[in-house]
Length: 318
Image (cartoon, rainbow, N blue to C red; front, side, top):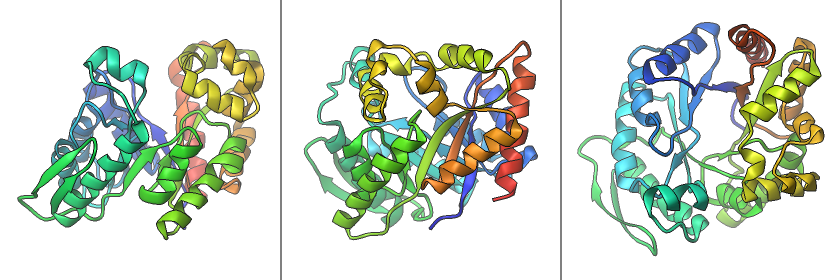
């Protein structure tokens, strides 16, 4: 079993702001920083290369790099830079994203996403870990070798939302990265599927990284208002709606956050309450928590800082 830790989603603002935020997380003693990447926004791998040059200890991970717009050999070429700048500190998270995001923006057909992800991981692992790849699949072909040393110390993780994706992660990935999944769903659905996948692959169950919005704030109504504003897109997506329905919230199909959904997903309350809910996620089987600070109340910066301080304190006590 991997060591338990709590990392933080570091997105938001331009690249200088994000790099400065990663430095601040390291100063607080937070163990890991995570960045998403997609569309025409700042690239996470490029940002982490810059952050690697000005940090010493903090782990870095992508959550996630969408597969369809970027050939796996290109992803390996970029990953090498971060791995060389920050040896032993980088985790590569990959995922197929969603049809409604990929097809309109890139004009790429988003078909058989789990096949796409499986093949992508195979090409990346061969080239990144072994230094050479010769692969011909249904969606990807990869032939080439690294000019320098391989990087077998870079875990190759993947996004997971529904049963089959968690099973795939159990079979072939070095970790499953969830997103806004209630803890009970991770315990009752995700982990059993990861165990099934691991049995198929004849391997140990890989880590489960549980994405968890965190808001250390006592006013429940302000927390709900903040969550509905800052996490608005998720109930609008059919994929997330079905995940929420499977977790006991069929009302998600109405394309909005219910109070019950927010209660199950957002870890909120005072320091003691949130600390207890973070520990509960570990008790339910999470290996690592990817905390996503939600700001509530009149002072956004102070609200986020309060959550970060609590996250650092709990993480250092694991």
